[in-house]
Length: 214
Image (tube, rainbow, N blue to C red):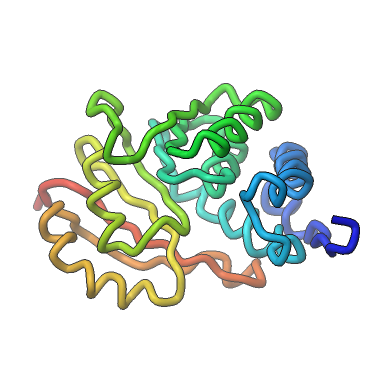
């Protein structure tokens, strides 16, 4: 990996998350050193590891509320581990089916001392109904048409989906109209975060699951 250029930490990172920046640095360093070897991230992503990945995930932290947040398809820990670092006041459940990735996630939870985080090896549809979540996140997992049926059933009460999406999110919403209706999603919206402070903005599909109250 000597020929690969790794992005230097942007000054905005420490300004946005001063109290958690050391842990973010440790995680980023670990991901850079082992991510390609473990198939967690490609070499072409290393020159933009902070702007495209770490900060892209971190910027959604203020959307999370106290309770239990599930991250479906955690993979390399984006966004689950990043959010767990920034929000120690929240309990996180990282859901990932692949053994190699589960091992990586557990290793990072231990290495980073994340007492607010546990990892479950399973597909979202295999999760026991007793694991009720207040919010669910996901990044680069699937289209909303497929993702909503996987994530909405995991929520309890007026649970909330916080799903990171790309520039085609509006088209995905239109294609997922049946799923949005079936799973009783209300107040759906697209949030664009970080445009004033980051070089790459983050798009989030947010919706509440359950019967809409007047």
